[in-house]
Image (cartoon, rainbow over all chains, first blue to last red; front, side, top):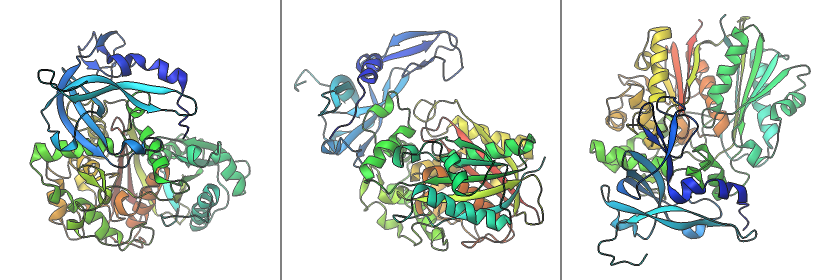
Length: 140
Length: 381
């Protein structure tokens, strides 16, 4: 089924979605993701781009069964609230069985396919998180 | 300048396969005009969130004014996600208080059943930040599921205790002729229902339904006024639930509660009846606690102990059945709430009636929690 994924949109978001680009506020020091024109905490526009760490901690997670059209084959979708340093990110969790997820567990970023548009051929990739590999025992 | 609610029109929330978007909206609008005993208005404000994606109609307010024979009216559309209906009421009050219009028809309408639910979930997930976050398959319930687990773990509240919140909504809805799901549920059934976003199930989630509600707001009471709007306000631009320092205490909701205190000298807990935008159980608990109706971690326990129902020691919360059981036709919901509260404070409410209610409060946070909307109505008798 065509998802009508936008080519320019997919291109525009590559910094945030591929590289975890965020913005640090030079006024209050807070970091926010995705980067916006002004700091959502203090309103300052004096910002600089930073890249978030690729390893973090799972603060919460959910197993989504009410999966949107175009991605039903992925059901259930694992979703995590991941703390990367001082920032929280909401992103999909991959390479994990729901039963092994625990709050507080260490996770690491990997680039994965989020969705594809069969007719137009667009494939959208983005950062997902997987349980942190210990000693490289799992395939990536 | 005072703003009076002179007309209320409510349709039953449900699957209106026989009615198009405009017909459904017109049904509520005509009922509101008739109940106000007027047939002309200065302005029409339409509140609809999903309609342009679901029904494909631009300039819905203009088309609706035409369908209702309201020649010459100013028309506007207001969209503020889950809170659109309250934003529309706020806009109408602003027009009236500024002297730009003497009589405004507010119509909230959305249809969520014309397409399969998975398509509607795709559209609903755009209530979250849509440039990055909603590019993932988070669905309409993903963030609410994340917040539910955070809530349970932080406060040591069990899944079984959470279930008393939707059970409260349903026990109220069984009296409401406009509710989509007018029946009681056993709290023990909630965890066993179809999973939506663990730990939340279908019985923690608003049903997909169609609905329309309408109000006539006027600067003059002309003898038929049900209520007046004391305060209609909103606060946007705060960090979302997940970006906020404490995801379970959105600053936006704290801000509108503070404004209520500043303007009226009362706190949410002082009103008689409250309608909350509890899209999901976790959101209902967060709203109740952020408004100070319960101590942090206590809202589900308070619901279990009957604090928010008739005879409890708190305000009656969601006598309509809330979003869980009255339903949440997204853009219409805030208009339902204000209409229901107007009927509560005028003693005309056809459902679970809060006897002697004088003040009614409606609060909705946007889907990601970054903004909050609040309307306070008061009886005029």
